[in-house]
Image (cartoon, rainbow, N blue to C red; front, side, top):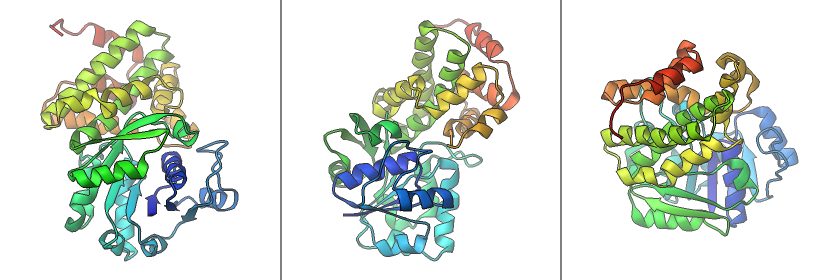
Amino acid sequence: MKISIIGGGGWGLSLAKLLAENEHQILVWEYNPEFLQSLRTLRTNPVLLPNITLPNEISFTDSFSEVAAFDSELILLATPCQFIRHTLKSIKKSNCEELWLSPRLKAIVNVAKGIEEYTLLTIDKILEEELPEAVYQKICALSGPSHAEEVARGLPTTVVIAGSDEKLLIWLQEVFSNEYFRVYRSFDILGVEIGGAVKNIIAIAAGIISGLGFGDNTMGALLTRGIVEISRLGAKLQAKPETFLGLSGIGDLITTAISTHSRNRFVGYQIGQGKTLSEIQASMQMVAEGITTTNSVYHLALKNEVDMPIVTQVYEILYRQKEPLLAMRELMLRELKAE
């Protein structure tokens, strides 16, 4: 099968490797000239996936026309949330809309996580605004506890894929799954999107409390109350409650909050150690989507009158330079209530 991946970051490349190992033919679109050159000549990106060599079945391009001519059965969108709309508009400006309208195309799978700034939309809604109506039923989302570095190394991983067409979801499960990568299916694409986005904010908070030197009690409390906030927002937006007890909810939250692979936890840890957000971002070569998502979700919660005290305090720390210790004190001294 021919599969195109829009975005050659760490996650896009690890999924390209996975799908190539599943005997599919892969074309990856990457915009960064330096990364593209390394991928074409050395079949690796030592910055994003150190010590990983990509299979020969993967090709690389920076041309949307070449992606359109590839005539894929499956397209993966592996572009960070805040760049997805721009990327889709660039495809349209390149007169490559036939990319979405090929009769061979069965599914468009988003693998990024986040809430768009200003519009406060989940990624599936961005796609509905930018793609032809004829492909709406083909839009799916893949999420779960899945660090790119570990998937690229073939470590056992489970994720969930969400969409509206059960036959399509079953087909996608078969496309992705193998002995180290297991895929479940869900009809709650909204819940899967919300869980994947908001957990990055809680992961920043987890990094902050680790950077401050707090212990396991604090972390346990944070993760427990964090999933409550995620579920609360999901319920308000009419997602299914059980989604947040699954892989894209509590599963992804735990993994992202405790792992040293997590870019969002890294950001929080550095803040807890006393660094400023601008200093941290200047030192990073990869995108920590939770930074922008904090701004988006804070305003989404205000708009929908959802109480999210952890998200609020992370927003205050990132965007209003609040002292982390003061934020923790205010969380602990909130009005007492039933669980």
